[in-house]
Length: 163
Image (cartoon, rainbow, N blue to C red; front, top):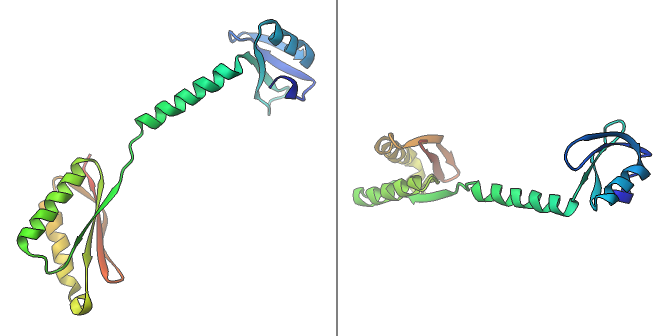
């Protein structure tokens, strides 16, 4: 901006958006100074470079405000984890399913993990049945993002809310 522009000639756009033509850099700087504004290079790759007469401080302020508004409107999706054992009893499983429903209602994803300890790993089909049961009970409310799969001694399935 201003004296930092190195091109000998620039295409100038006025503060109201009007084309002022191709001018020597000194003349463009004088025009900006007369209006008490800055000369800002907006397209340095063009031939000749394009500069605009504007209030640079106000421009930066508005740009910052726009980015803050965009941050306010974005939603952060979290992945909440529920851990279950393959021999989890009926009532406890229903409580875990209620927790999953609550997470999905908050528009978060749910990661259901079946933990196998010791010799339980030999009965991984029981863990698969538990995950299938959860999927059946929630089939109207969920989309399965990741099918059940083994990761070490854990079986994992990721659920997302149906939009």
